Length: 327
Image (cartoon, one colour):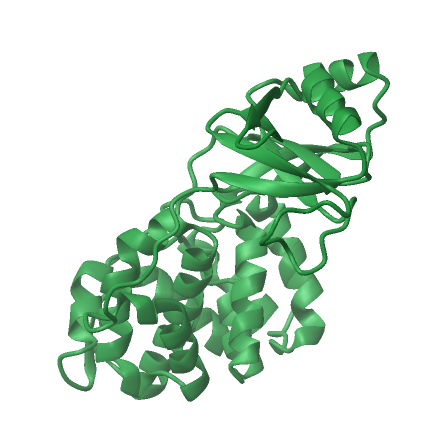
């Protein structure tokens, strides 16, 4: 079978290959590894990348990477990937996989051509400029997607990545550099102080009937009714709270359009979903959807959806007990 052109028309076959190799079952910040690979390819497309570079982005973790040891294919299978995405795109996938990041990343800011260290062979070789540009473009798309979906990794690696892409700006497309500035600008040494939000303390629901709402959240979800201030009503759970405003009697300041039934809340629990379903059934609360896989602030979650008396969508979620590596 001759090599297939790496245009978008062949992407269904590439995605099927990735699924067959387990990418859709491999957890990753933002969902699964397959979802990450697709987002990276789409991001490269937004930056104006040619089809072969987008294909390389779609497959960049196939052979594993220096930061992600779980390969979807062995390097002895390179011919198979060549058939799917073409020789040039596969060569960039192999280049990305073979990079010794601890050696190569510092060199990206210290002269041209870039002296590349192959972690598979331990050998150094100068990197032609087209390959260096392709390598860095995929690196930027990969890292920006990971950091966008994992705040902890963003805080840990953001400053170093800002230094890396600043030092190698000449190898990035204008679109990729602009994306780096938007995502990593707050990590610049001269960025100055910034507000950093660490948690949600409370939120406000506008409701039609205070007593009916309090009964629902206490009876069905186990929240604790509280009264504070000048007779204000609220619901307490964990380290957070839901303050309640009665429709047409909102306290100032309030949202521009406070409306009962307009909220969509995700609440975490450590109760298994079979118990959640049983508790909802016992309380006569219909399930809107679920349990279904979703993506939370820290990674993959499983969610069951229901509605409160005002029609607000309530998502009850549990975090999957998995590590989330970053290819």
